[in-house]
Every structure is written in structure tokens, then in C-alpha cells.
Image 1 (tube, helix red, strand yellow):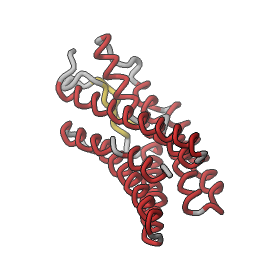
Image 2 (image 1 turned 90 degrees about the vertical axis):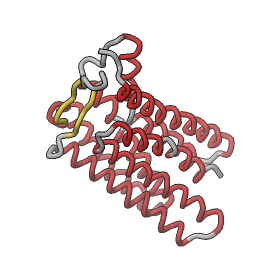
Image 3 (image 1 turned 30 degrees about the horizontal axis):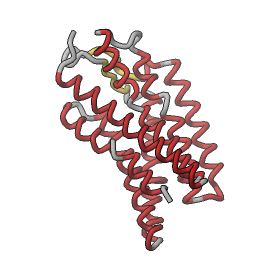
Amino acid sequence: MAIAFNGWLDGLTAAGIILSSAIFGLLSLYKSIKLKAKLLSIAGILSFFVGFLWLGPTTDFFLKLLTDNNIDPVQVYVILSYMWVAPALIFAMYLGGELLVPKYKWLLVGIYLALGVIFEMFLWFSPNQSFDHIEVLEVDGLIDASFNRGHLTFIMVAIFLVSALIVLGIGFAIKAKQSTGLLRKKFIYLSIANIIFVVCGALDSILTLPLTIGLVRLLMMTYALWMYLGLKT
């Protein structure tokens, strides 16, 4: 089965997110070493983890392109994609805690570390129950997966996204309103980055039209740029 147009759109946009995240992740790490800026290094690592959330479709696309085979077994597809949820969330909450509530930073990280471990256990040990289907689609030749919306893994992903929106998206927006000058601009950038991540992450899992998914992913490619702009100095 050849890769159809929808498959090319899916694979290339997923690869684009990984590439943009890697570029700005490396740039953030380089700048953090040069400036000795710890939070910028955290943002760089976070950018990598966020980009890796699209590792499943990217890997399947290039494997199909180069070998004419999909990922086998197909359960590896969802593990490649969602195993990065917990690491990304932990680094994001560390960053948010450091900037918003430094006194309670480790409490925030500890709570989401525990939730992340639970999520990873369900993902690794019950992928077939966590997803309604994980299969190669005839329409594009690539693997597609859909969450079982009644399973704990989906509920936890929803909780993680809402938490990121409240703590990071809205939290940074409130800090921006309370700040002035350059600091205000930086909090605005951080707020935009995290709102983009939450909205695009949610829409990517819900939408079915390839063109709309492609547009969502193009927006997602700007996530790491906004993070970098918010912390580069």
C-alpha cells in the first residue's frame, strides 16, 4: 500500500514539529550554557520532549517510505508517541513552578511525577485497552490510533492538558498582566507557547480532516519558538 496524500501530510507535518522542536531545543541549550541560564536549559529539554510526542507518526511515515512497511507491532506506535507525555509534563511543571510559585515548585513537580508514573504504567501495559483502535488506514497507508475516551489514560491526558492550560497558559498570562516592560513581553510569549501546545495537542487528537490537522500542526511548529523567545535572556 503506497502512501497517499493524506499520509504525506500527516508524516511531514509530524516530522516538522519534531524538527522545529529540535532546532529551538538545541538553540535553547546552547544559549543556556553560554548565559548560564538554568531555565533556558529546562525549556530546551522540554522542547525535545514536546516534539517527541509526534515520534509515532514520524517514525511510521519514514519506515513506510523507506521499507514499505509500517511499525510492527502497531502498539509501538502509541508508545513512541505518548511515552513522552510524563517527561514533558514534569519539566513543564518544574518550569511553571519556578516562575509562578517557586515556594511550592517541588510539590507541584511531585504531584505530576506520581500521576505521570501511573499514566506510563497504563500506556505500556494496556495499550490495546487505552485506545479504541491502532491500525493501518487504507486511506493513507499509515497507522492511526484513537483514544478510548472511557479509559483512564485518556482521562489523565485530559487532566494533563487542562492542568497545563491553567498553570502555564493562564498562569503566565496573569503574570504578564501583573508585569511591565520586557518581563511582561516574556510572560506573554510563554503564555502563547503553552496555549498553543494545549490547543494543538487537543485538536490533533480530536480532528479527523487531514487538512485541518495539517494546519493545527503548522501552528504547533511555532511552540518551541515562543518558548525560546520567552526565556532567551
